[in-house]
Image (cartoon, helix red, strand yellow):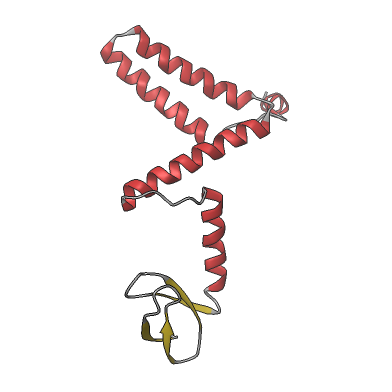
Length: 146
């Protein structure tokens, strides 16, 4: 039985973050509909579940992946907005992830300091001792140990 289902799902999109979100919202709406007793609420929940299953069994993988990427970008911006009180800038989720990975790889050879005046991040080579750093943005000089 399990093998048959695996064969059926071969070439289909499957579950992703957007599907998890849709199914969770649909279940929450179904629980709320038990107390509200309005048919429109149940119809909305069933429509969300139908959309979730449609995406899961779809064979158009590139379109479903693009939908998921849009959702992830929206979710990232929403989290940044509520965490920091502002949006995540103009960079997409994938670009931010690539920046974090590059920063992590550079931590072996460089130290990163924030300018005390404008908070611009400045990269300095490690192991140079006490050095005077000039901010490239506001030209403020500050002394730090690398």
